Length: 486
Image 1: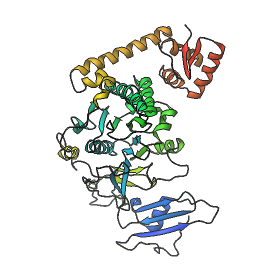
Image 2: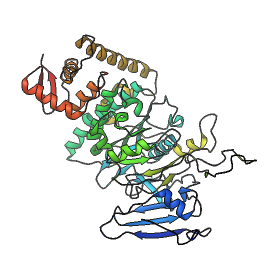
Image 3: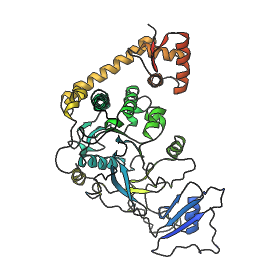
Image 4: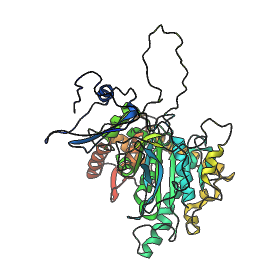
């Protein structure tokens, strides 16, 4: 698409008017555009005044606003926070004023939701998380929330969710409990009922498991990366049909930040994906991982709405004060109906930082206690669930640390204190150190945690097949399961 003014200034936009252009290219061509060129052609200065939507083929709609339509946002209303008949809440507004919605549940399929929220530091991720947690409370959803910033990301959530975990060890306990509830309590009960989908409240509440700053738990070198990756994947496989959803909130979308697992990413990207302000490398990763169609162009979200104005280097009286609001909460809902349309979340909390808990955020949660896990699943949730929010949790977390230290010591002993170089040897060491059979995914995660060269799942599967076929220290002990020959 090329726009060329007949004379200088002929494309100037009248004041206080919204202009919408319907554009198409000839059959057989795919529409492409250069946002910077559009901004220049229409002389709008602020790229936030232009929105471009395409159908991925020949057609596009170009909308030019008299001012940035997302410059200010109101707080949410009570109605915005309540799920509609499609399991959605309103989280903000698109540039054209349409409500921006995301799902908390899919009643048409009886499935709990899997979700990803990405954003760089200061993009508004914590406020977005607080809003969804408040909506979950108001809708009777049981919220388990792991805040891996030591509880600082969402301090108002304390007492407003069923389980708040603030350390990696407690998050591991939370994930273990969630998988146990899914597999040991709800799955067999629903099978006995002849049910293959979930109905809210019949007999159990919807359960949401959320990990904030998830990259701290799942990145390469994290102490519990192997187990955490396994548990998140296991919950993703079994949780949806029994009413247990999960969300990862992270500062980046790189595969290495999320356990290095293609399987995990493939499962999560089918759910609700929110992209707050990002880096250029994140955008490349989103396209590469299939979260965005190839060729999709998203207008970058700037850190500030303050327009850049060129002035003489010697001008006097230049105002350097940054008194223009930032773009916190501005995002793209990649899984929504308008993935390339910029939206902005509602204003959540006080405009200025508070010296303590924010009263506006506390008011969002509303009165009363949060929804709790059903009594029939308490045994499956186990000792950790019973100890949440009490002094007893510290001892359980210490036990998790001891377990991890024992695993590391066992691997070191099996390896003689040396780092194996051949992938076959690294696989043998991992299996020899494990008391239980392992899947190829688990073996890959463990191999990549040994400090050696990063390997891919396909390479590990190839070596496993060769080792098992040769009976060379590795045996198949079940469908997709491998163990050391002892």
